[in-house]
Amino acid sequence: MGSITELSAFEIARLVASKEVSCREVTQAFLDRIDKVDPTYGSYLTVDQEGALAASEVAQSFVDRGEAGPLTGVPIAVKDNISTDGVETTCASKILKGYVPPFDATVVERFKQAGLVSLGKTNLDEFAMGASTETSAYKLTRNPWDPERAPGGSSGGSAAAVSAELAPIALGSDTGGSIRQPASLCGIVGFKPTYGRCSRYGLVAFGSSLDQIGPLARNVEDAALISEVITGHDPMDSTSLNLPPISTRDLKKGSLKGLRIAVPREMFGEATNPGVAATVQAALDVLRREGADIREVSLPSIELGVTTYYIIAPAEASSNLGRFDGVRFGPRSEGKGHIGVVEMTRAEGFGHEVKSRIMIGTYALSAGYYDAYYLRAQQVRALMQQEFANVFNEFDVIASPTSPVTAFKLGELNHDPLAMKLLDFCTIPANLGGMPGISLNCGFAEGLPVGLQLLGAPLEDEKLLQYAYAAEQALPDATRRPPIP
Ligand code: GLN
Image 1: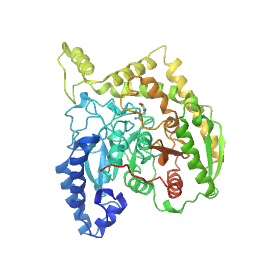
Image 2: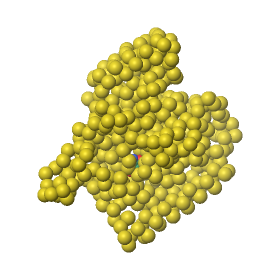
Image 3: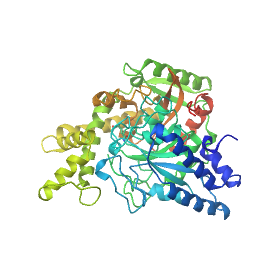
Image 4: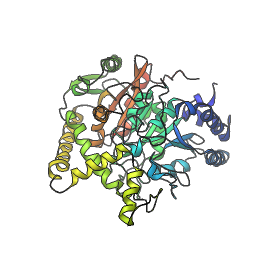
């Protein structure tokens, strides 16, 4: 056996269940590695040493009573926009510095009940707005494949932690790609369930019609197992679907034989780096040899996706972020009267990217502009949903690169926010359409990981995971680890 931190979540759970290791040993192994290695990668904002060790004792009591579930004793990292009872939750923003939620998000409550152990909170782009984790007000996170490069974002801390073996699994949130894109850039698996399958209660809202929590993991099986724990109906979230949790029962029963895969031409255009396109095509050739029926399709609305998203997401954000006024949570600035205090708090508390989105969103929603922007964007969104639905009438899955580029250098794009946003065109459709999407590593371009994105029809989460599992078995690089100490 290698060291504990090299193991996947289900392998750890098996050792715990058979009492070959104790939950405390597992947790301590990760805490020690975080201590040693995370100063290099900066994936965590808060490491909850005490809480993790206490939770490991709770997990051990499940094992000792014969009540261990499939992931009991497994450590997990949590993106810092997901509320954790008693543990600071900042959204990587100064405006929430010191905010300690008095409750757990539903996903956290559920994983605790299943005996998982939270190690702490991971870095992100401020309020999940970004694609490199560089808009965090607190620290830079580095890509374990090359520390000079960004881990992607906004769930960059979660992706780096899983990739660098600082957690076997992690939770992220995905509004326009924030689980799948960093998973792609860090060479791991990232899964966004169908909108509404995973409760958003306790997730600090960004774009409420788009936001979805999901896992980052080292393989599809781990992603599926944790999805089963955290999904399912929640009366605390009014958009939660009245459905049971995502089932893993048939995960390994899928086959690539006869699988009908649509490949949208628009995701392999000029904007897609040739090395990425070639790597994804080579992976598709592997799937074809395994019997998949792969055909090119055209989905013209993909080209409108980024524009549409960057109206709807900021509009919803401008409304959601209205609550941060320094009255109830976070630090409060000095100012003249109530309005002055709120103005100064928001001016000093929010970073540049967040402010620019609040302004764009407020503008798009204001009288006289609502019809021209927000309403139009909603119409395009409906059109796009229709276009994708038509493809799913004839195909089981849509395949593409997750990101048109591999991990870029830190500092390379953050001075050009437009260029960074234009890179989101492969991931955004799943959010606009509510579809489930998964990214898995399918190879390397110039030594950097390349993600293959698979999209399923809404509510076909189980099937999508099955296909992804089958693809992972066929792709030799799917679970390769970065060359780190
Ligand atoms: N990169 C996109 C944005 O900046 C997506 C972010 C996300 O999914 N949270 O909005």
